[in-house]
Image 1 (tube, helix red, strand yellow):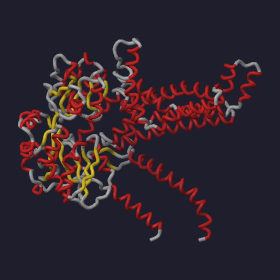
Image 2 (tube, helix red, strand yellow):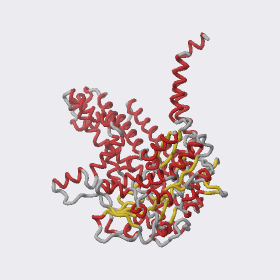
Image 3 (cartoon, each protein chain N blue to C red):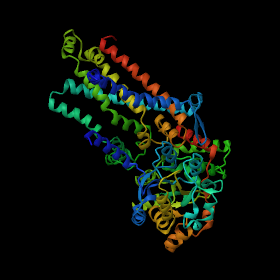
Image 4 (cartoon, rainbow over the protein chains, first blue to last red):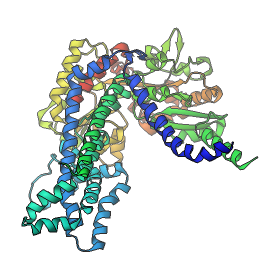
Length: 288
Length: 347
């Protein structure tokens, strides 16, 4: 009894996380893996061990097409987030003189995270729509004569919306990485005769790469699994992998195929996470 | 009782009361307008049964929700293309039609549907029906469209919407002249798929929910689409958007929703009281007034509708009903249809 009492805190500290991982991660994944080998048969599906679902995914071109499209959209979202977030974070860390302004600007990026995702996606509908804010503005400026339908219900609007929604996840790690760079390194580089541009290129940027890698991973993985943006602002050509999975679990009532697709997606995401993890570690140990 | 025990008991009570099969409470899984307070409140007052409604967004929600188990629901309302699946999955039980007053008032055409019966027993009680009509924005047309060709018209590029549903295959097949839309051959399905792919660049958005279609018209994004006859058009009329429904030359599909009793429900008493109410004038005119759908019980509809509404909902028009291609369960062909539609969306 005494022994138990002495070891209880330790057992709880280790036990609760292990139990958590077991019940909420490994078990569900195990179930999905099991389903992915099952056989679709009207009215539902039968337990089996066969690779037919995976074969379908790789032979029916519709899945590859959606997969490549998802890859493209996610990469565009990550790239757009990076191009916007890096200068912003750089300004906050190195150029912004006022501490108060820096805090306000940083909060301005983080604050939208507290607003419902759905609401934020809906707002883009009212901005980009045919009779939306952007069209009215452009017509007021006389740049266009009649409302354009080019802004909404296509891949462009999906990239814009997803970039807006996920950009905090790019700003935060880059900001943290830049903040950790000692100022004297840049000064040393300047003393050694490097121009500011070359100092940035050879000192600041390489040292901030772990943050960039983290930001890329986060924004990429979040966009890769998104299915709300295609639903709200995507057009007929906006189907992403997560939508197909949702369809297989719902309308098509083909849980085995949906599970196989989910597993393939999981593998893709996990490999990206491990690659980025390796990159970050390289950055931390100073290797290039 | 210790505090700990008290907390445990409290938690269990809190957990079970929400989804409980409490005595005198029925949980219905249904469409939004099918458990409207206008007829549910009077029912709760007179019967002493409480009604908890959970809403579905599409017919595809019934199977996954019931498959997830838990024995939560007592009554469901799938459409006639999904009722057979519910029977085949063993989710529903045969109805005691003798315990349902008003059963004889149901249109014979609905009682003849295969999807609601098996081995001489009825599993579904026809409730409401309507057409998957087509709809256009009045201000966008000088000559009203009369054919499905309008949905493939280059002039309307970027202004067309279609329901994100396997029924898109039915629409394209009819456009191709294949009228036996529930028994299409593989070639005919492939042809329908090609037609939908040809149409895709003209489509602004495939609509998924009733509200989404209303928003698309309201925001000026689309001018023509298919629609659940009576429903979205009345929502749009209330918003001041003038639209007109039409049945194209190529015909339209018809749907019919039935109430089904979930197998082994412990609330049979309240469930049958509920079925009786829904088939009575209260439920039949209730669903017609709230949703703009037609009623399945002809005698109840005649008794509670004005002559105007009775004819507007085609209750007096057997030819209209016969002209509709009533949804039929696709059985093992279901996968081929959904796969073709998914392939269109994936393109």
